[in-house]
Image (cartoon, rainbow, N blue to C red):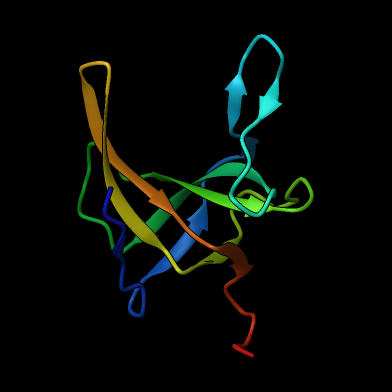
Length: 109
């Protein structure tokens, strides 16, 4: 699977919903983890500009050591955003991942 970097230099992102853990097994509630052992979460984001009127919100997966406390409606920056194509059980689509979600106003280190 190829991860394609997304250039977000001229974009802004608004949080469109609550962060949720990415569940591996619904029966046990086990949360999926990345290679470094951090739990993975999903967050719906509204990218601007956006000309996709049918589905303007993207769901981004990101790792976090603790449950993310991100306010709906806040402006954020998905650090290291990538896009990938997936196929499973006759279904397919585009997915998004990033290394971290930061406040949009945060200055680069």
